[in-house]
Length: 305
Image 1 (tube, rainbow, N blue to C red):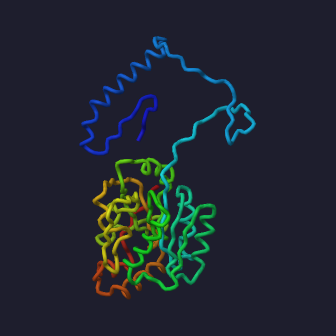
Image 2 (tube, one colour; image 1 turned 90 degrees about the vertical axis):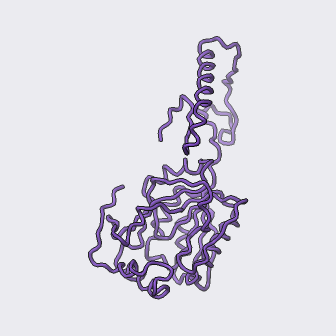
Image 3 (cartoon, rainbow, N blue to C red; image 1 turned 180 degrees about the vertical axis):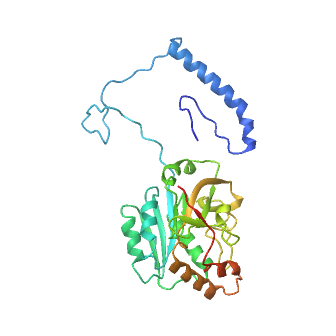
């Protein structure tokens, strides 16, 4: 979105906002006329301009800086939350080094790792507040219990915006430069994104079983203290957020999310075996999709940044 900063802008989120246009045009016209009068000298009010150097915390000696730029308003806090388990040999460090470009805080559940996943989290996010919780016994066999624990730990940090990602998910490169406007969106409390299942480093899969990127899913939520959050109690595939969040104002984003967890054959085999162990009849998921994980010649499409 482009805005000419010489003139005010009206951001329309939905059709009902069109009712604001007439008043906005009127107010803008009046403001422009007043500004024109001021520039032409018709205004009698004078605004004094100080030429003295200003003392600030960054300029204690009153040195005359080239330019003093006023501080912008504080950006809403963005908290990354994630569940990790034995991720040290996968994509954990890669994704965290990307996430650190735009997050303010992290809440991470180490769900019974036997490797150094926790240490990687602290190293990759050095300098950023990290609330790290260790589960000595994994809770993944009952995902609802695990996700509720994750949620409660996030709430302890008094979050504003919550970005809930897995340890093998990473946004496209443009995300860091474009997340700001989402966090400032006063009339939206939930953003949904498309998730692409990469089958190797350069291609994603698309067929009857693998088409998650054709839908939008919730990953970024503004926490509302007065909202009654309700969870899906399914032990598998319960969702990362409470199930009733779509009652909140929500919006789709064109920023894309890459899922790296399927991008190597050995990882696909591990996932297949795990699903067949935890949900062999496809009671909580889609058994045909489970079986398709091991397809030898799936339909792949190049990923283009």
